[in-house]
Image (cartoon, rainbow, N blue to C red; front, side, top):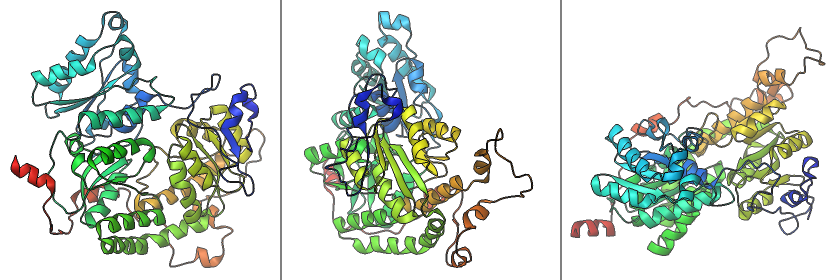
Length: 527
């Protein structure tokens, strides 16, 4: 196995088996790092905890809910607002975060009374919100507060409210992925099947593992609505609490992020017989293939083909404009979880860049297998890296840009490497045909930023060209391109608007008459 040993981690020899460099002709049988194990002592991991995975990633994107953490106030603050999962209800879930603010005295005497007081206070403060999710933290898990009993007590006293309890303390798993699993299973155990939804289409799906980062969910819903598909619920971006209680009536679970949400899909298949279809909203070809698969499942392939034809004709020339200018640029793909394999192959094929490294903080072995298999010779794959290893990798690989989270991104900028926020995006949405062009534009802007070029100069030793005039990105990117590219009238820069989402919320869609009654309707009629 071609393990790579970082100089900075020689004092932690176990780390060697968590990084590989893919050699010529090597495949997964000869090139695969260890993954999804407990962080090795001595290595300061960039991972989040299981509480963070449950609340920050999965739970909080639900839009019409009071999300309250039962624990110290720092737990809720550190999982608030760092991801831009917007919603169409004025972003209630982004504006507010709630905590019971547990102190030392509560650890000694218990915090159940404090929890009940906070629940009632929160509902009174926001009387229009009737749904709540309570997240357990390490502190209240260790003292054994019975959150379920308190929630039940409040629901009996306030019959118009409904409360979901997520028992996922920070220590419940090697990374945030443990929390993903726990909240998936808790939701289906407690809430799915407790509300009968209204069915309005012959084609009904749950859209699962989608978190509406800067509007991703709303872009994909546009395609589904144009195909005449009813999206019963979204788990969980821009999702409604009560819609998610009716997940059991869908005909198909359409799954985006398998790492965070395949668990509930598998349970829905086991308990309710709803099949699972994995799709990919990033990249022209993966997205087109995904729409075709959904169309094929329902027998409406023609509707999918019509959308693909329209979208590709509009946006492909703009993607090609950026591809011509990004050709051969080196990127480190360090997004955290499944984006390393969602993006690895299609950014190389459709934008012309070269992925020189992938890493994952909480991905499982399967995520790394897909990521490594989609990279070429010489790519460095790292599981659960620490900051020093990241710095050493940047010095060795010298990428033109990295895609990662804010903390490693800021570290990269300090050593002269521009970064794009792979978690919350810079100027998304990045899903959809238009979104993929926005992503290419952001990569282009990062690499060719004149300010970044200036930042690379070391004024203590470099000669600063004082006679140089104003420089634009276009001047930097086009200086070595052939004239047929620079003067092409067929290719163009991105022509969309700054806000590509708001108009979707008021858009009208064609009606597709139903041809059959749904079981849910029959159940409702009988009731």
